[in-house]
Length: 303
Image 1 (tube, helix red, strand yellow):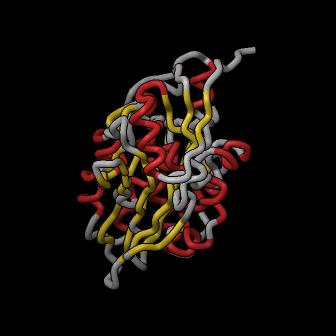
Image 2 (spheres, rainbow, N blue to C red):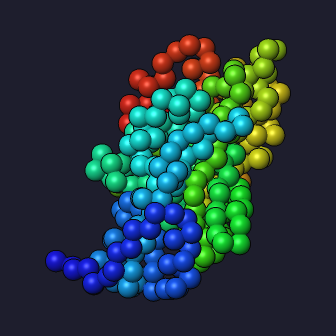
C-alpha cells in the first residue's frame, strides 16, 4: 500500500489568509478542496508538497448563485451539489444532468468543480460542457481579480494560465436563451470519459437555428468549441440539420484536435467524434420534435 508523506494542513478562513500562506510557503504548498485528484498524485509520489491549504472554510466558495444574467458556481461546490441545485436545474438543466454522471457517487460527494477545472484533466465532462456555455473563470490574488474564458484558461493536459499566487474562486455560465434544445453525449469504457459532445441549438420563431453551439471534449489535449460546425449549422431548420448530419459531423471531426492515449488512438477518437456529433444532431432534432431519444442509443449516456 502506498502511504502519503507527512504534510501540514492549513485551514484558512478567508482569501487573504490563503494568499498569505501561498506567499509564505510558495512551491511547498498546494491548494486543496476535494482532493480526488491531488491525493492520488501525492500517493504516487508525482507531487511532493509540505503543506496543503484547505479552501473549504473560505466563505462564498461553496455557493451557487445568479448574478447579472449568469450562474456562478463557486470553486469548492461539490459535483453532488451541482447535481441537486434547484437554480441549475432551472437555469442550466443540462449542467445538473451531466453532473449526475461524473465518475461515481463517492467522487461526486467529494470532488469539486474548481478542482476539476484547475486540474485540467483532458477527460473532463464539465470542461467540455462549460465551453458550450461560454464559461468564464474568476481568479483572485492580492494583485486583484481577473476573469478568463475557459477556452483560454486550459492550455493543455494538466496545464492552465493560473499563476502560483492565484486562487480559482468560481466559474460563470451564461444560460442558453429560450427556445434552445440541447444534449450532452458521453462514451467511455473507463471511469474517465473517452469522449464528450455538447450540442445546443437555439431555434428562432422562423424555425431556423440561430445560433448553434458545439463543443467536444476528452478526445484531445483540451476541450474545443467547433466554430466550423456552428457556422454551417446556423440559419438552417432542425430537419435540414438532420439531412446534413453526415457532412456536418465530418466537418466537426476534421476540425477537432485529437491525441492518442490509453482511451484510444487519435484516429479512433476522430472517428468517434464523427459518430457522436451525428448522434447529437439526431438527438437534438428528436427533442425539438418532442420525442424521447434515449431508446435509440442504449449504450450511450445521453443527458
